[in-house]
Length: 248
Image 1 (spheres, rainbow, N blue to C red):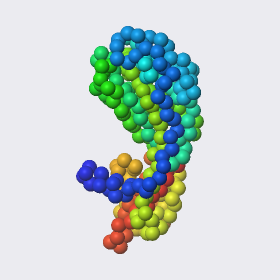
Image 2: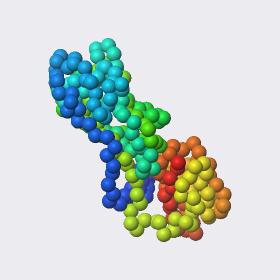
Image 3: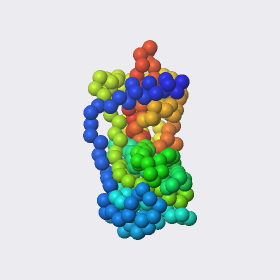
Image 4: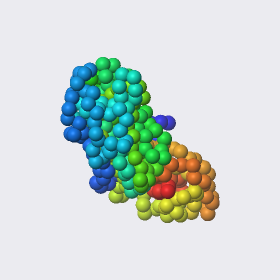
């Protein structure tokens, strides 16, 4: 069944060629002192930059063009300036490079204002190359900050990027018949249906988050779903129909 959902995601969320928007990009060039390959020479505090102001730094140190978060006994974190994630249905991704100390001392958490934190695991240590990690979020809003933090002691972080993650139905998709299934394309609390059908609501990761049997002019309550873009799929008169909606 999981494989089927993945196929649905590929088919329904095939994207047209559009540009993603870079909201933040930082290679920590200003953290040039020290290095990120040894256990010493990285204790000089990093004063921050335009993307990560000083007020949002906790135990952040310069490490040869990267930042070291944490100490031998304390966790560390960096928090970004306020960012606007309200575009593109509130979908965005945070990526960064990471490696640990002599051993991996703990996971990394990525926290965005008002959204559930995500935990990232990794295996690289200080003598290894950095590993690139990416986490996806839905429900972004304006005025949000991004915090990257250690959960135990030390880790090196580099090349933080935050980009919007728009989902656009490709040309030749089911837009011609979308009005036969759903009446409202921007949804606050309820999806209103234009036909009788067994329907599924699928998020941008291809996961079915709601199923129901509906009739014409009835509604399906979705107030508990995160903000973002979804597909509503169903079968009307033997024909598969789907429609893209935005949950606000």
